[in-house]
Amino acid sequence: MVDFKKLRESKAKPKPINPREIFNALPKPPGINDLYASQAEVLDNWFARRNEQDVVVKLHTGGGKTLVALLMAQSVMNEIGEPVLYLAPTNQLVGQVLAKSREYGISAQPYTKGQPLPGEFHDGKSVLVGAYETLFTGRSKFGVRGDGRSPVKVGAIILDDAHVALTSVREAFTLTIPVKDHADVYADLAGRFRVAFRDVGRSGTFSDITNGKDYGVVEVPSWAWNRKLPEVQDYISQHVDGIDPYVWPFLRDNLAFCHCLFSRTAVAITPIFPPVDLVPTFEDCPRRIYMSATIADDSEIVRTFGASPEAVAKPITSTSLAGVGERMILVPELMKLGGAGITPMVKNIATKLAERKKGVAILAPSGPVAKTWTDVATYPETTKAVTERVAEMQSGSSFGPIVLANRYDGIDLATLRRKIQSGWPWTRIARYAENCQVGRKQN
Image (cartoon, rainbow, N blue to C red; front, side, top):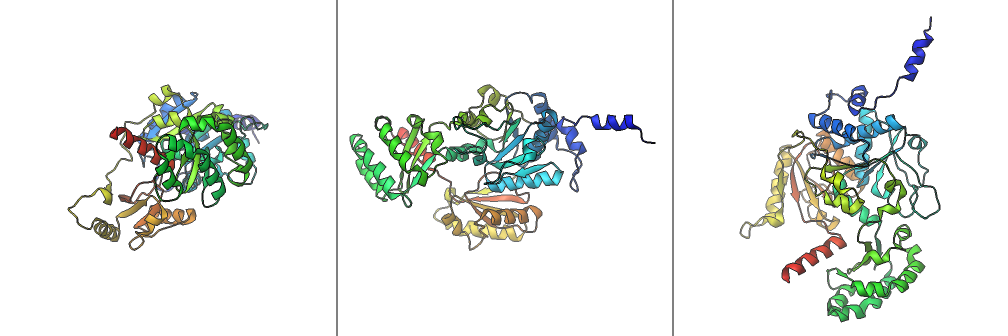
């Protein structure tokens, strides 16, 4: 006979909201029985502080941040039944998060351009995973303040690798006008500010940069920028649809708070601080979880996201050393060996290590630099190819060497204990900031 009382009781049984209890109920991949001590400690501390709007969670690289974040996401959905958005810096990292969710049976779906947001996400039954530009774009599906649409409300946003997200978020709020595609607009803007550079004694530098002879970056003097704001705003609004209409809604009313930078390849208009408050989904979110590495400069989280300084000052950390290991890092440009051929020597070391099944990755700032290593390393040029090569190294079927272009953060290679750093990535704003630092030292 069916016991209907017990049946009703089983249906009414609440879902677990403690992330450790959620983990215990999940299917586990082979060889995994429990959380690392560091993961358990961090989850316990977060659960006690889960109602705070801004929480910074710090784990060592390799300490299992992704699983911790997914368990937090499931906890939020189980407790309040609201949507959870998971943001990562790159599409390759988005793929890693989705793979981890499948591994543990946590429901997650990728953000797909051109498609409506999934119903299961709206219902708080599945985590939506996307890159930072999923949310931070001028025509976001989640809504932008003042665009007349109702913003999408979420119960929590997880910001993975938040300590390195400044570049990703700044790019989402930066209008870049490449000279190769919009030479007329570039030339027009350069002409409007040529006199200003003459007035500050930098007309020669400005001419060489805009003529493609100098690799430097210069900022339009603030007084000249503000003086010409009305005409610049009107001019750009007439041409922006053919350049980047997604950024303009963020900038059109905030140009007074922007830098205007000229390089030989483009002119960029970028805000002093990313105006994330124009994205109601983020600004009004009751739980914002910043996943960070332990070596990070957390002040970037305050500058980029407007997070509470008090919250950043008391991050959730672990006393465990899980995930900490020894790694060999070779930087050829910094190796001074009395005129010896450093790069050939390092290439030989990389080859020998890979032959001995010691994982080796080479990190380069750009495609052209990466191609200088293809005589000893595989260079995957597309996101799909990177994902495939990384999967091979994760499984132990390959040990490299592999060379990656401008992919410095979040690449999870369990077999990797040796890294070669070939150059360093530069954005226009970073190069300009570096120039300013050099100028201060010289003065």
